[in-house]
Amino acid sequence: MGMGFLFNLIFGVKRRNYAVTLIGALILGAVSSRFMLIHIVPGGPATTAGVFMGMHQYTVTALGAVAAVVYTAFLMMLPVETESLSTTCIVHKAVIWLFVAMVAANTGSIVIEAGWNADITDPHAYYMISGHV
Image (cartoon, rainbow, N blue to C red):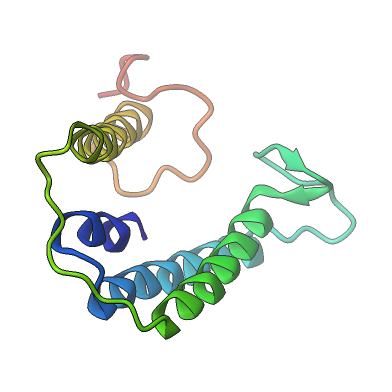
């Protein structure tokens, strides 16, 4: 989802950038809905994750994805399209690098947690650090 807004910052406000955000939000909603269905336990509490306002983290993520779709759809209705913004502004550069750093940190934490395995079903420890390589 963040790529669409990042493209707006770099290339100017365009509908195609919002379309990238919409595609990301739809994928996020589908994945979080899948995990919601996988973790349904009749009569059981939320498992393997914290609870936010009485909802499982995947439920909160699915609701956030729906909100992102609605918000982005409203943004797409606005008539404003701009040319490429100047990325020489220190704030724009800081936002771009912050986004890149967050993606890199998240990718690194996933690799440390799951190693190079594609499917760690329920990790309770960091796979790479605990010597399971």
